Length: 266
Image (tube, rainbow, N blue to C red; front, top):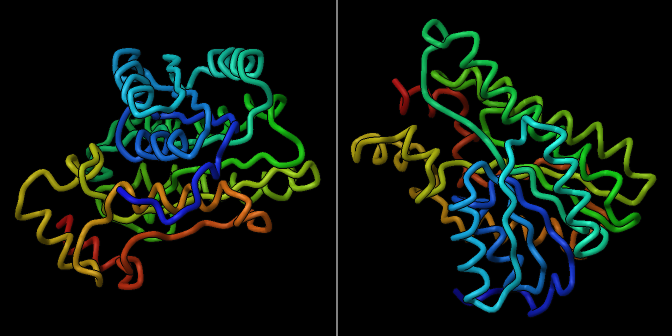
């Protein structure tokens, strides 16, 4: 895919991407690496991370994978320290690890609810906090992958709505607290994105996928490349004065309110 960005936009920058072994986050890592970043991929499955890193290397980039669960703060702290020792100060962090499954609130166990909150919200905080000591100051950028469920009540998604609204607020609070250090924090709230595990779970049938596309004013799913483009912009010098922002990239779906997702999920 031809890039609209100039070559070498991320040259010699160090980027850590959680959830980097698949989906949107893998595509972000691939795009960052193509622009010259040295990428550290974090996820729970070493084999997936190795495959993603191998693909980046075969395309001429630099990447390494470290298996860890974002709920394990000590493991993240170790990865951030080793990244700093190996590559130098960290320029970019993408908090992308997430969990989701569709279920009515009355059918979600307390453990199921807690699991999503722990991965999405605690995982985001753990990643930011573990990285803080090793960030380039000034100049570092932290990007969280949120969701439109953060501000649009969505049936079968009580756990995700709670977790992602927390992610957005943590992003805004840390943008205030860490702004004086020259660290920027922003978030992307994607709508439906094609070829991702999340959408395969939420829309497992062709009929449900068609219902989603009818609920999007632009009439289609986003591509992973389109989300990666926004990520690259927000982590680049072009966004040097943007912090505390949640950028919605959903083809206009959230403009229709909660009824759009209610019609899809019901």
